[in-house]
Amino acid sequence: MRLLLAIFLPFLSFFTIGRPVTGVICLLLQITVIGWPVAALWAVYSVGQFHTDRKIDEVLNRERC
Image 1 (cartoon, rainbow, N blue to C red):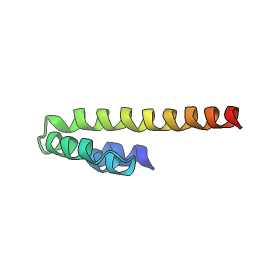
Image 2 (cartoon, rainbow, N blue to C red; image 1 turned 120 degrees about the vertical axis):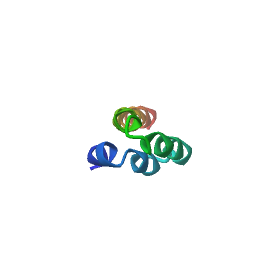
Image 3 (cartoon, rainbow, N blue to C red; image 1 turned 135 degrees about the vertical axis):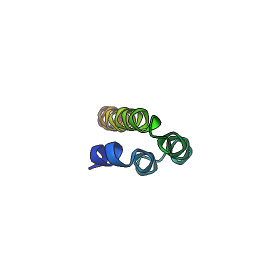
Image 4 (cartoon, rainbow, N blue to C red; image 1 turned 90 degrees about the vertical axis):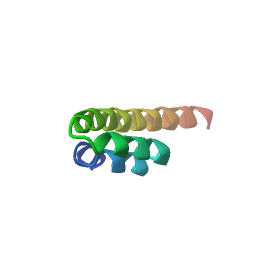
């Protein structure tokens, strides 16, 4: 779901992963037609990193218990 959001509304995906300042910067980039593909790629990458970070945190928390 977040991946589709990152492609079609890149700025909104940053708000869903808890990065509002980055979302505003992405929105400014997204306003231009040339910046839209860049914003979409940036959002897709960030959502992927968000999922990876969550998985790493889960593994580390499991090892501590």
